Length: 476
Image 1 (tube, rainbow, N blue to C red):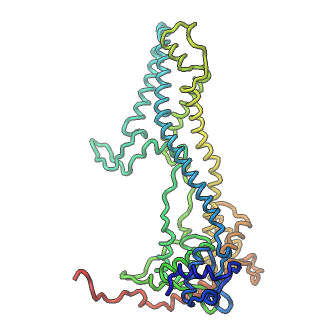
Image 2 (cartoon, one colour):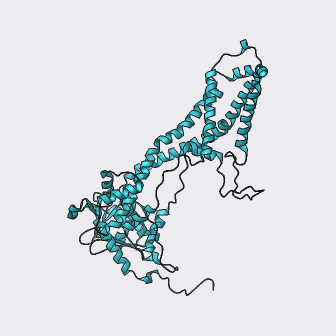
Image 3 (spheres, rainbow, N blue to C red):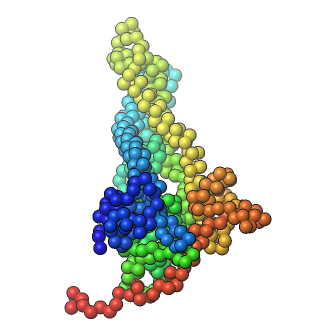
């Protein structure tokens, strides 16, 4: 038997590019390959060129390639990947700038501005000694500075980066169950939002394999959509690849239903039934939190940035350049103090950056409604998928039922266009035979598939799952 990829290369060279539909016999006659090799090659092409399988009234499988042997989506995918990489680069650079800005602004500039305030207070203390105002000013400033330092560097502060996960209780101090999040990470969350949790790229395939084993090595496209939530146009190429990787085959019932058979995946030494994978609608999409930080951390970060914004704004309004400040605190005669100017280091730089940092969370708040709608649509789509897969076996589902499921799952009212889009994507048509019961949709392909898969599972032999008696072991 020829390797599937070699057979695919032979078919690509011999089949007419202008055609879109091929039977196994067409492929074999055009290429000179055997029927087995031609079928394997067609499945490899389906996987590569995002093709689909169709069944005729005579039970013949037709391999359809909507785009021929071309990949028009590659340009879009490459552009998407390019812009995503650019976005990740910009985000990484921005996060780096923010982290650097934290060490400079939220700590350095706060200390600098407080020091300037203290210097002004000391310089004016002689004028206030007679009326007692000096003591009040100094007490307030020193208390402000001491509390800022305490809440910044004491062990329970969000600035403190140590973890207490492995700490033992000492003198009644409680230990922490989770590590303390470093302050710079909380700053990242405040300005950029929480990072998305990493996704397992093999999660969908593992779910499908678990479903295959739980279904006695037999599976249909509906089962794949049930556990992955993938659209139907993506499932066909995926199944063709799984057939090549795991020795599967396609079985067509007399009525034209398609079932996929993977007997080799049933072999196991475990006893009892294999658990089915959880359906996609049991995992709801959630809108990520705005920051993911405790309220106290967000307040502290916002307060520090606001302090720098206000202080730098005052420096600009007063024209307090470095030369003017040095002269003011050096007992220079008033007539020799430089005129007010535009402070760059202590004015423009912290003001602009602090203002831009506030625009980041405000921008995310402005876009939050779009994220909420996207999450609502996805949860609604999963609810519609559930209703269709459950109702297809019993002759279809009503439009009102789909809208109700969508509404409950998403919390939003679906439009007729949204329901129609989901129905068409799942291969549904209006059931004209039951028009008197209102608008109902029937999914004939899913009905035939469900019957074919059920028949295949009932006919599956339990001997397929047995590995046989052990006759040799390296332990002996």
